[in-house]
Image 1 (cartoon, rainbow, N blue to C red):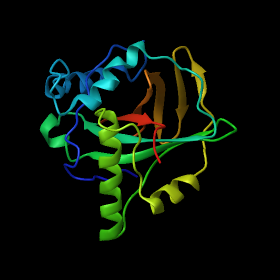
Image 2 (image 1 turned 60 degrees about the vertical axis):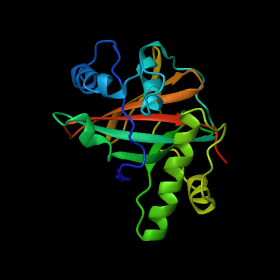
Image 3 (image 1 turned 90 degrees about the vertical axis):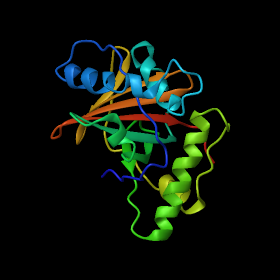
Length: 202
């Protein structure tokens, strides 16, 4: 499930070159269309958090963070849609990495106004970390308890410079600096999901 949180974080993502794969073209096309909108060359751009993902090609598989839960933001990049129309497609997500190495990228769908406020707070808490304005994301207590109850589901495979797994989407995970980036290509769909993650939260 993908919860659309509204324009709380008007962020964008920039393209990167990838090794040849069947889904290369859709990834390259969708991320390339966001490069100008993200304005990564502008140090004052409000969308710079998504520029973390532009370094995906230079990222590495790294050591899988077993036993950790990473939190972050996902944006849906739908083929043929204008970048401005995607600013309401940002949602809060968590990457669960079990002690056994199994993973699961989970989003949370609020079911009432109070939960919507909680999710909005989580989105903003994570966003300020990626903007360099905080060292740790503040996650609401109820949401934090829920995240800690989640379990990994898929066994990832280390393939060159990334970890991959196939669930509802073909997922590609790389460590980029202090952050992690996931690119998902749904089996059924018309675009990709791009996610930036951090383990700095409380």
